[in-house]
Length: 428
Image (cartoon, rainbow, N blue to C red; front, side):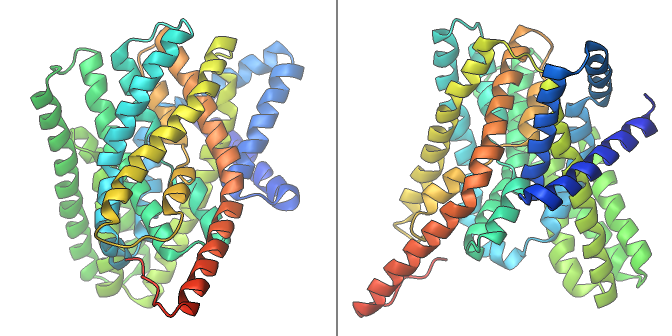
């Protein structure tokens, strides 16, 4: 198939599935799309002729999911997400977000990596320890896309939405840096020393922040000198794509750079250099880009089941890894929050909410698919896919009721506190 035919096919499938979800299922868009795509893929595996399955597999293989997401779609998705995050809200939660996006990611990586090594060994699966740590790194980043819509419809507090959005935007970048650093060590591309790891990690992460400020600042100056919404939208499009591509070429963290640039344009740029007309067109444009690409992404995630190995022991390993990932998330989130409670207050049940709201998504699948071909890759891709499907469907569909339950509990506790004559402690 030609590139145009592939794009046309994916957009057509996404449009049909979106219509079916909106008309009948009425689930959150990303969750509904992935569910329909997954069911259709299973139907194809069970009922369709082998020739049709092979044709679809060839189309999916030609897309190269890992390259398409990590070196293409991610630039749009991260920029669109960062563009609508309020920097003042982010600043109020800066220490929580910073710790969750760094220490918690590294902690979860180590916990999951060690647990996965024991799990694979118990099941008789030969996965080297360094690849188990790699698995911990690729499954640690949370996906803001599937969860924010659920939180909004469930009436989650703004502080919780800011924590999850901020953490997800930054931990995507941090986790990718950790993964690429470990992948370089696993394949012999980098020296396996603590100093070498810290040096590479620092160059990627700090370089990403500085590059994001530089490119975002340049775009800010360009926007300052004009008042033409068509050109201004084009400048932001160039920033998201050109900035991401150049950051990759310079071997610094492109995801972190684009998040920083998006925050700068979405806040300072929006307030200081854009007219109301430009702001409206900019928001409409990036909201549409975000929705379309997310639709295609989650359809692709559902269709990817046609390419993974469904060996029983691989799928069993994935099912048994689900509680491991949840426990690692609980520890890596709960421990820092428990320490920070000495200095600031948190809403009741925030650890449980952050744990269950830590959905895994397309980045985890893409990172697993980027591993060198072989049996180890096949095992990790299947395990990752099982966890991602559970995360999006089970956690995504139950998160709304959990948020409402926690909200009702918080209101009851607030009422009891007020009746007792004590002023409630506000969350920072």
